[in-house]
Length: 383
Ligand SMILES: *Cc1c(COP(=O)(O)O)cnc(C)c1O
Image 1 (cartoon, rainbow, N blue to C red):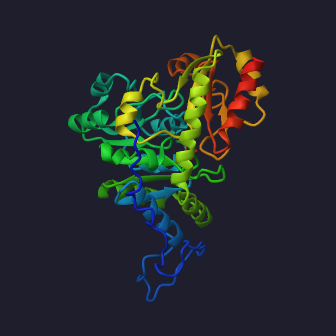
Image 2 (cartoon, rainbow, N blue to C red; image 1 turned 30 degrees about the horizontal axis):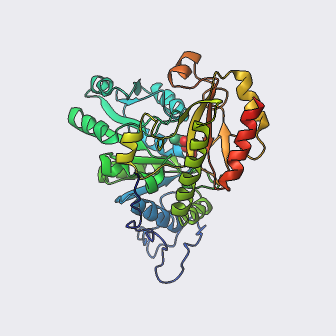
Image 3 (cartoon, rainbow, N blue to C red; image 1 turned 180 degrees about the vertical axis):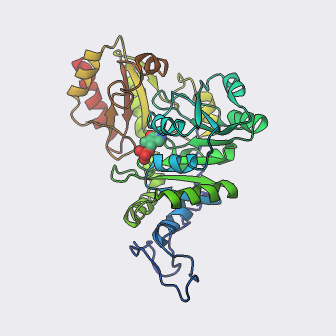
């Protein structure tokens, strides 16, 4: 059984830059700060370096992962860019074509600067052992993976990376948030988030973050952030801070709703397979139960003997469920990776990643779940 371990988290971390005065961190919009004498400041000099609203958010995000350091970025991919900016030509990294498709664009960009990406299948950890070499700086994974929801054994991967190389391990924890999974406890060196998804939670923020206990990595990435300017606005930080106040209740509800929908779909005659880590039939059920405390609203499923036409009819027939990119909002959102997030990937690679014409990805929101089930039921009837 899943068990929840969040009551011991310090959710008051970063609540206020002026403890004892305001309950809510204020939005400080000043780009610059008064210096008593030139070169002497009280921690703030210019907002690209740091800002009271952003710093209080960083503190809060660090506390949720029990981490020493956090950095908030303008987007999830901004975090990735800042990490990569500390690499040198000749370095390499290891990742997989089965992860979030937007990562590949950044890795292709850095390829031009001499940083190679080795794409492997993490389901067989011998591939990882073979791919690691003395020039490997980073191993980047996602668990559960997007969009197959395959669960990887984070601790086993961390052990191999640290035993066989000097590389650091980054876990993209966007799908579960620190509420359901804390990869630093499993041996990861950095945890990365797209805040645009469940942490933001209302489909009205684009942001990203990293957390780490490693001071050297923190300082390098922070320096990259300042140099590149991949910073969030004070207003975005305010909204993220606000979102964090409800993270626990939202995540509980996302889990409850997504599990109910997954159970409904699993028993539906027009469904081939449901990829949800909390289902006993799922590949990663055993590991997920060990390394995470629950699951969020995101999962995927295959229509039985599905064709492109059938998938299109399904999407056209949805009334309540919104069709669109992204995930993690209060509204249930369905996407079609074949023609949306993964459309630029060659067909054979898509199929290898489990992305077929009958794969539907869905992010269950916070609605009354009976309405969501009814809507999906009608859409399945229509095909
Ligand atoms: C959306 C997403 C990202 C990228 O984040 P942005 O905030 O869109 O830049 C990275 N990883 C995963 C798993 C995502 O879903």
